[in-house]
Length: 348
Image (cartoon, rainbow, N blue to C red; front, side, top):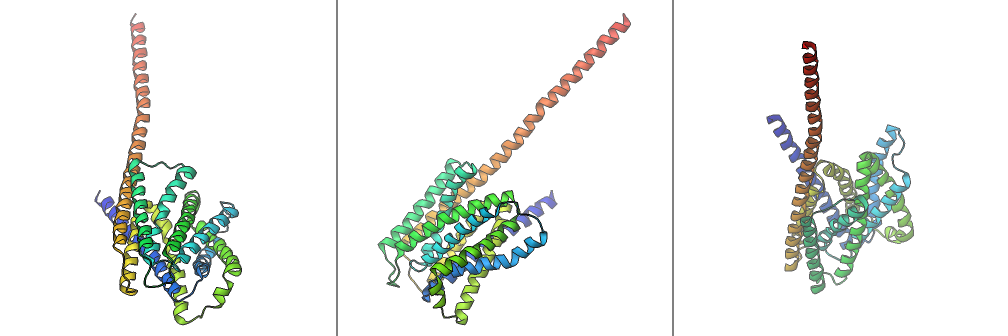
């Protein structure tokens, strides 16, 4: 029991550490994207290309070394990568029009769409309290929209906060489709294959879209050491996010992942206040609190529902054993009766 307790404690610490790495990688991506946007560069597809290129260079050789066929048809990976690239494009483009705090908080909209998609696509069922937590998150997101509409970004007249909010919400829908599809593939398949094919087809989709939509923007970039460092930092942070997230989902599920990603919003506030020296509307703090309460309600009840499911499964297993025990007892009593009849017949 002591060894098992120590193992569980180390496992919990490992999951917490990995969750914070995921949150840190998301905050780093947000910081790099906002910094690139402030330098006047509008190239979200190029940033996404850096992340998928690193995934391809690392995971595709590992997949080729295994020398086995794909367990899922390649065109499903192509669709998954296309949706993922569009989500990255929309969210990264939003930094051109909105602040880092609004983008990172509105990105939590993915949770709501993930509930809807898993309900219809994967057959997942949720409790009343989980719906209440998701509804609370939506209320907090509405406060963000109200804050951006009431007080436009006075620090930069070129900012259009509501347009940026709309881009984030659309990107969150794409993220939800991508996350649900990735969850399905990881559960049905190997994690390395999923990440490798996501990176490979992500490079293909990003390259085609860059040549069509973003060619002039990339050619106009002045590749200074600062700019190269920002693009490289975004790629490394995205690589960390795609690499660690499957481990967190497998070890603890979406509960700790959502709470960990909430930490990235706190880091976004710190970046905006201390690095950009910008003021934050008081409605944002209220919205952050409401979203935090909603995520905690949803996560705690997700954990309790999982425990209830496990308990009911264990009870069902014990219940299935009872008939067999009754049958064995009944068969034993029948044998005793036959032996008694044989003894009585022998005496007679």
